[in-house]
Length: 67
Image (cartoon, rainbow, N blue to C red):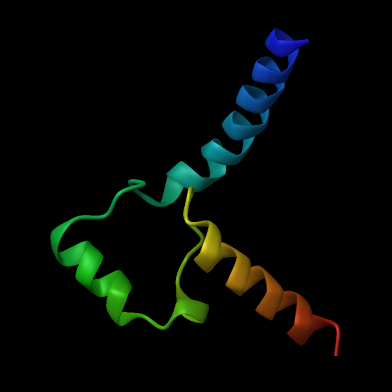
């Protein structure tokens, strides 16, 4: 059971990671980090492991599309 869950989690993360990694590194540094911080949260790209920002953008998108 435990091994099956680990395999499932890795498969799901791998499928999301392929799309997410195409845009650049997970951890932004230097000038890239400053550029991201200067961009309003609703205009930023989705990035892996950035649960708060990704969730805010998904909720905003869902609310604006369903009005």
